[in-house]
Every structure is written in C-alpha cells, then in structure tokens.
Length: 344
Image (cartoon, rainbow, N blue to C red; front, side):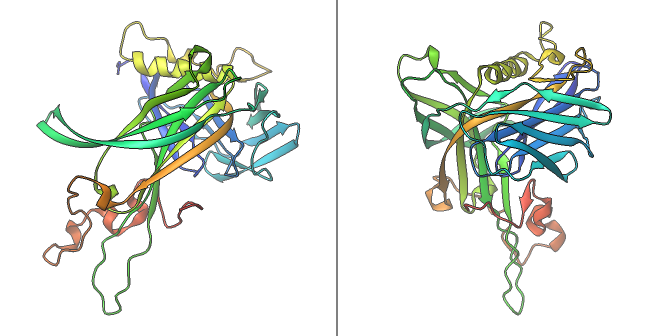
C-alpha cells in the first residue's frame, strides 16, 4: 500500500450480525461512511455509520445518529445496538418490487440514499466444495497449505436481466479447553461467524451470459483448528440494482489496482448517499437493497481428508498459561459468542 494512503476498514453487514471487512486505501481525508443492507429475509436489518480514520486506523463508529428507513410500507426507525451499528425496528424483511431509501442524520447533517427497488428475481445456488493441498512460499520458506474451495452452481431466471453479487459466510462451533473437574462440567458453548475472503467481490451481470447456469469458485479458505467441530458455509446470492452493482465493481477495481501509480482515487468510489444541503460533500458507503437466496452446507472433522493438529485439547503436561487465550475465553475468539445463529 502506498505511504500516502491510509486504510479504511469498510464494514459489510451480514445477516448474522457479524461484520466482515474490506481493506482498501482512501485519501487522508475524513469521510462519513454509511453502509446498510436491506434484504427480503427474516433477519436483522442493519446499518453501520462510521467516520474514516487516518494512518491505517479502523473507522470510528458514529454513535447517536438518527437512522430512518423510508418505504412504501411505511417509515421505520433504527435503534443503536452497539457503537455505530443500528438495527431497523419493526421490519422483518423487505418485499420484492417495493422501494426503499435511507435517511441518516449525524449532528446537524442529514444524508439520504437514492431510492432503491428490491429486484423481483434471484437465482438459486447449489454450493459444493473441493479440498486441496498446495505448496506456498512465504518469509518462513516453503510450506504446505491445506485449503477448501467453495464453489457454486447457480441456476438463474431465463427472462430477467439480473445484477448479482455473492458473499460467503462461515459459522462454526469452537471447542474451548475442557479441563478436568470433580463434576465433569463442560466448558460453555462457543460459536463464531465471519465473512470468508471479503476482499474477493463476486459479481455477474446476466446480460453477458449465454446460458442460465453458471459454475464459479467463490472463495478459498485455509483448513485450520476452527474445523475441529462442525463448520458451516453459507452462500448468499444477492440480486441488486444496476447502480449498486456498479458501486461494487468500482470497489473491486480499487482493490485490484491499489499500489499502482495509476490507481483510481478511492475517494471517488461514491455510493448512493448524498448530503442534500451540501451536494459537494463526499459520502462513502452504499445502501444495498437485495433479493437474497441462501444455500448452506457443513463439514465435520471426519469428512476432512487432512490431519487436524491438536489446538485446544487438554494436555495434563501443559501449563495453564500456555493455552491460547481463545481456548479459555470465547470472547477472545474473533466474533466469538455464546449464542448460536438461529438455524445452527
């Protein structure tokens, strides 16, 4: 990354409320960043409001914003559930064919998105996986890496010109260290969720296709200790507007070209938000209204053709302070929680 750039960790809101991050450079100017995703699914509808920071620091959450969803179904307010993250109240999901926009007030400034209509159609995915072991060269020398590739065979509607995006989430149960005790008390449950390869942006405009079925590799994930219990992958296919598709294509271009002297200035990656009282103000982020279909599969350790090294297993010869922190406390695991997703 160039020294004259800084890193914006741009939040991508997921249906399980976990947040994946896309890391791309922005100019040394502080911008308001708003990202929201409204889907047709009965899931938390979340809005993230933050301000970009300098010198590679994460964006700073903006608390106290007034967030309102405006729709033909009525208007819905959002409540702040954690710093900078807002949950739309009273709405379990959007309706295909209906139109929505977002109003966000930060201090004395109000930001509004363009009106977005939820597409009527979305394709159907059939996800599958391929295992592979490959040699890679790093600063530590050559090593063998064990990988899982997540693919999807997608069947798309024949009569529609669709703008599609795919994202993949992982959810897994994590076994904390089970220390012996007189009552055989097991450790508390621990679950984790995360985006897989959030910087790999998978887009298709079906107008460019000659058939209604496609097969594509979506993401790659290294096999590690998180696969020692049941491990889920969820493929989400999002049918979005042409404008939103164009926004993600520009983000993809920035990610692909960063570090080049001919980079597109990231500050020009503007989504569908404006400040009506100050049209010259640049606002980052986007309000995405998506018709979503999901396909999910899981793995158990016995199905994985690789040896999984011990990680959190109890060893009577191992001092307590030698166990990794995540083996002792679920909150130390990135996106770790004692509560499973509703479908788990």
